[in-house]
Every structure is written in structure tokens, then in C-alpha cells.
View 1 (spheres, helix red, strand yellow):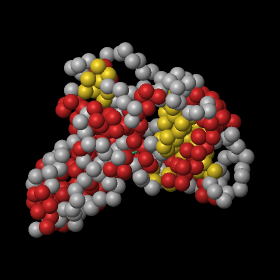
View 2 (tube, rainbow, N blue to C red):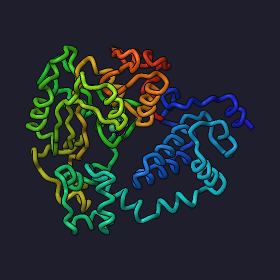
View 3 (cartoon, rainbow, N blue to C red):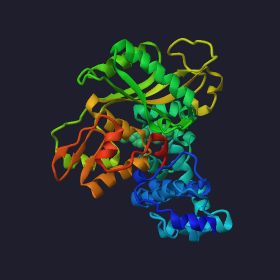
View 4 (cartoon, rainbow, N blue to C red):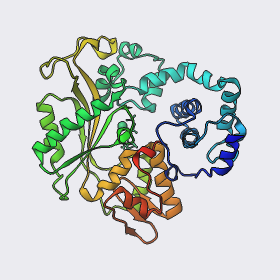
Length: 383
Ligand code: DCP
Ligand code: MG
């Protein structure tokens, strides 16, 4: 009865960017099964279905009570028939037969193993599955043609699939801060992504670099990478230049931003993180055996995925908002901007589609103000 009173009183907004979602929530069991279904749909290329399950999970994460009966879901948004059915099964039987079938299916398991390789997406993983491959050992025996990125992904598979601890993220931020300080005094390094939302672990470290004098940031990334490389911090890196064109058709960005891609100068890297207490080993030293064989246990360093993103100062608040996540929060911010405010938001700018003007912002708070949204701090963006 208490839950139903809460439900009656609780108007859950449709857009994730209108909800406050803390990391710890009350419906873990249900959100996990829905996220498995979202992942499975994504593995099948059914993005709409995947999105529906993600949105359902996201709504449950924001609830101030634990759902015990399916009737409590009556007035909630974003809960489609399929999600409700699965939730009901879990509530009544303790598990959903459909979700169990998915989790144990050969395809889901193989896709999971392959997509966990850095640089491998659903398309490549599906192709390997079609070709009859199922495991990493199959992949190696088959001598599948790999990109440079994938080769490193496979080599450091175990490390890159070990959660990155907050202390690792802080240590790497500090190393990058030292590098940036050497290359361009006054430039700043900001930890974004899940760690900024308060997560204790993550799959990578997302760092934003900028300088308060616009233009000074040009050329910074090359110097930083070269410094890090010389010090032996990089196992792999690949950079992309800035391709943002301020005078391009704003209608185009609103579309390209839907995929979560931006145009900043960026470096995808694999860091060689020295572990505290370990003896110093010379730069370039290799772990005994490949990561795939699982014999890298006794080493004093670990491989960590790090993204370095350089932003011009005037775009920094947009980049910070975009790179803080969560993905559900970002997606809904863009959707809300477009449909409720007739504005196009991406990681670079906010553009009013009818007034045809750019709305500038010096902070994330100002962006929320432009959008008539209550400010939601990073810790409450875990939708
Ligand atoms: N992002 C983006 N454009 C990209 C890549 C990422 O806007 N080309 C955004 C999406 C996420 C945020 O940056 O909201 C961080 O991406 P991650 O995949 O690292 O997600 P998290 O940091 O939230 O998760 P994890 O803790 O697993 O690293
Ligand atoms: Mg991250």
C-alpha cells in the first residue's frame, strides 16, 4: 500500500534529464534484466528495441521505492508491454525465462566476449559469429584480420576488462596534469565520464583538456602525447584532429550528435599504469605472456583505456556536459532540447533552430538555464 501511495504521488518525468538519478537505487534486480535485454537487442542491431529497454531501466533507477507488484508501474512513463511482461515474470517467479534464455544463448555469450575487445563493435562481432567463431581462442586460431586497435585490445583483453578503480583514474589524471603543465602552463585537465558522476569504477578514463585563452589549446595534444610516450606511459595511441566547423549547417549537427559522436581533437589511448608498491620496470617492458592467456598476473602495471579530448574554452561547458553522461541522460537532453525547446544541443554548442542563434554558456548551469531545466548535478545524472 505504501508503494502505491508513493506511485500515486510520484509524477515521473518522461525525459531522463528531468529526473534525479543517484548511483545507488532500489530496483537493481529489475534494471539488470532490462539492461541485459537492451544489450541483446543492440547485439541484434535492433536499436529501437534496445532503446526501449534502456529507457524502462532508466525510469526504474529514478524511483524512490522498490517495485514489488507490477500494478505499481501503472502510471510510469517509458515502460512498454515487453518490459512490463519481463518485470512481472521477475517479480512473480524470481526470474524471467526469456532473459535466462538470452543470457545462456550461444550468440549472446559470443557477442559479449567479442564486443569486449577494444575496437570491436556489433558489426565485426556479428561477422565473426556468422563465420562460426565463438571464443578468443577461435579468433586467434582463425587468424582473423584485425585493426591495430583490435590487436592491442586483444593483447590487453584481461586488463581492459578489469574495472578501472577511482584511484587509478586519479593517478592517470595526475600524470596527464603533469604532462599538460609541462606543455602548456595554465591549461586544465578535467575528469569526466562515470567517475565525475561518482562511480567508484569505470571501463575507461575520460579526460577533457582546455585552456582559458581560446586558441592556446591548438597543438597541445601532440605535445602531451609525445611527453607521455617518452615517459613510457603509452602502450597504444591514435589521434584524430578537430573536425568541427562552426559554419556548417546546424541541422546537420543535431543529427550527427544523436549518435553521440563529436568533432573534438581526440586521442584514444591505452595507458600503462604503474601500480603502487610495484617495482619500477623500464619503459616498454612486456608482461610475461599475452593478456589472452591470462598469465599477466604477476606484473607491476596494468593497461587502462584513456580518452583525451581537447576543447576550445568557449565549448568547454558543452563538452563537459556531453562527456559526463550517463548515455541515457545525454540522449534525453538532446531529445528534450529538440522536441521541447526547438534547440539543437551537442558537445560543442546550443543552437536555437527557430531564432537561428547560438546560445553561449560559461558553465553547465547556464546550459540547463537556457533549456529551462532544473540543474541536475553530475551525481544525479546516473540515469
Ligand atoms: N561520449 C560522447 N562522445 C563520444 C564518446 C563518449 O559524447 N564520442 C560521452 C558518452 C558518455 C560519456 O561521454 O556519456 C562517457 O563515455 P563512456 O563510454 O566512458 O561512459 P561512462 O564514463 O559513463 O561509463 P564507464 O564508467 O563504463 O566508463
Ligand atoms: Mg568512461
